[in-house]
Length: 220
Figure 1: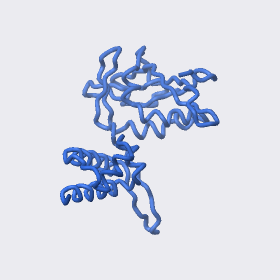
Figure 2: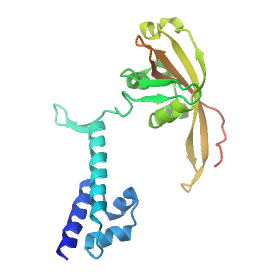
Figure 3: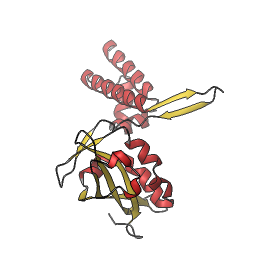
Figure 4: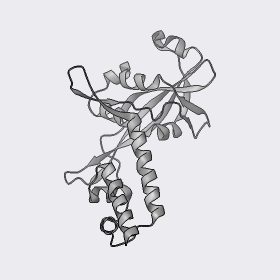
């Protein structure tokens, strides 16, 4: 009984670290709510290896979040949430059609957020581009129809000197009805802009010309 109680207490402490109540924790971890309740009450013995795996998973998720988000105070003691979305920097992804490796460099986040193309976007197209950041790997994977283009008006200078390429890619944004049920997907097209660097590697530079393809959503 003493061993079960210790495991139950450790389970509660683990859940408390996440800040979730039992129902939220159950949904996040994919464990039935009744099972969580039984474990925490000590009425059912939680296998120790499951506890260890959960502890590792929660620690890993916490460390990843800590890298991306910090809350600080400015000189007036007002809070600021700093978002450091570094998940993709340094990663390499492959295009299915051409087997080309695309690297993510340090210049991509700033260009993606602040380029002239981004500033020109309005309404649904602007929101669609913002959503693209969560699917960078997949957008690169399906990129197709590579074309080599000029550096129009010399906007990109030395960055475009070794090669400047565009690929077609597409994605869908969900559309919900008034009851919150998924109705379908609005389909968007975009051009993936890639530069060749001095080292000969291809680097993702931006996604441009984000545009809705049709007014009617693609049905499930």
